[in-house]
Length: 113
Length: 117
Image (tube, rainbow over all chains, first blue to last red; front, top):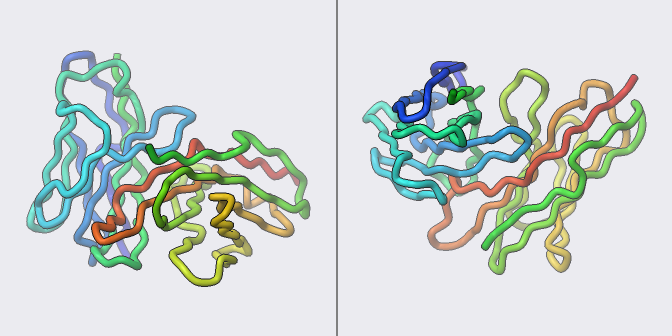
C-alpha cells in the first residue's frame, strides 16, 4: 500500500525566497505532522494538521505555515527563507486515535544558498 | 521544557555483539515512548513503543526496550546484532493526557550504529 509520499525530494532556494513542500498521507490516515531535521539532529516538530486546521505547533516562527486539504494531503510553506532553514523536512501521518503510531515519508531536502 | 537525550552519538560494534542504546527524557507528567530507526536510504520506521503496562516492550527485528520510570529512561537493547542493523536510532517522547496528541513527538539527537561483519 502507498505510504507517505513527499514532493519534491530535493529543492534549492536562495535567501528570501518562499517554498512549498507537499505531502500525501498514508491511505486511511487523517492527521499530518511536519518535522524539520537539521544535519546531525533529531527531527523537530513544526506543526500538526487535523480536519484542515493546525492543531498543535512547535517552536517555529510564523514564517512556517501550512495547510491541509479535504483529501488529507498537506503543504508546508516557508517564507523569507534563511540559511538556517536548510534541512530535511519530514512529513508524518497517522490516524487520529490514541494507539496509532506515525508513519514517516522520505522527506524533502531543502538547501538554501 | 521537555527534552530527550541519547547517550551516544556513534556506536561501532561487531556482528553478534550485544547492543544497548541509552535514552533519558525530562518531563514531569506521563509520557508515551518510542524508538524509531532509519536504515540507510530509507525513511524513519517505528521499532517499538511503550504506552503503559509491562515496562519491557518487544519490537520488530529482535529489539526490546525497558521503561524505568524512576530513572526517566527507555533504553533499547538487542542481544545479538547483525550487519543489517546498521542504522540511525532515535528515541522519541510525547506527553500523554487529556489533550494527548500523537503528532508532537520530541526526538533525541539520534545514535548512529555501525555493525561490522
